[in-house]
Length: 409
Image 1: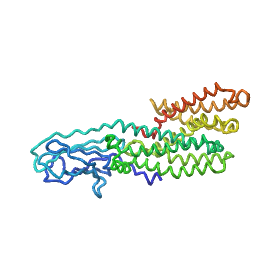
Image 2: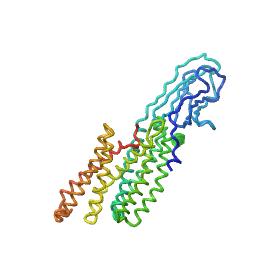
Image 3: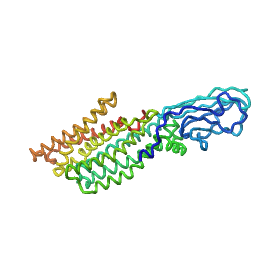
Image 4: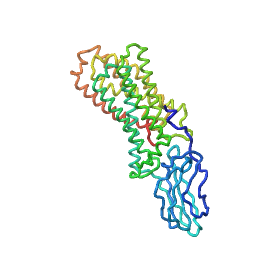
């Protein structure tokens, strides 16, 4: 599905021609055309034009002329005065940085000269906040949702009948869908650098769908439907009992989730040639490792901790799985620096710490069952609740630095 929905990376557009050309004197053109060497979503571009009196005269968003996806155009006003018209434009690059150009042409004669207008390319802080927060929430929901499905489908099938597990799944999946929709709606204003009032223009949404990142967000929504149905079927099927069945269930969950996680990698600004296959594979694996480690940790601190003795086998199995996810996160930490280094290290510590806590509590339960009774260990329970709350808050914040989170790059 990703191969059919996502457009092929085409790189940054390069200016090919202008009509009217720079410095040309024309009689009365109907529109101004700017042609590039590849298709350009005109709705995400910005074109401003001033007449000989220095007044801005473009009142509509640019458009692609019929049969010319590589050209953006704006109409000339019905009343055209003699003199020099100045044009300045901006199109988003593959990294969403503005590519700005300007030109001027004369109508009838170059009798009157005005300065080329300046083009404001700063983003509206409200639009940036909406787009950024939506990306963070979508990434956190992906990690928590996939991690929860992994625990319930592979490690603890009995937990699928618990109200807390079902509630966690509903909340994370709903958050993922809603956050992706908000990202899709706000991306046009973010890329075109419009104000909040113009950010939800239908023309911008059309341009979003034509863009690489918009196509990745659309692919995410399309993948979510069959993936949700498949995960529900897995959780309702006979629970995995043997090592082979657990391995098959794990491969099913992670294999299906990898297609979803890959959309996060494509939905971030990248080089003109697009993300390299190795980068896609590495970032997808990192997101899945975070999902297994962080999702399992959240399940342990919120649902498994209250399950008592019947969940002991699941806790032991989780304690063996989580170090693998932690090792992947530590490996990722060695290839980065700065904020991401601290993030991956923190996620790895949460993962390893939860695994160690699982082993410690299980051994304590076996050696001293009376002392490990949750009802007699109220101070310990309160401490665990505080640790869980702090860990959950820190984890959600840390997820913002994961690859493919949709944050400005």
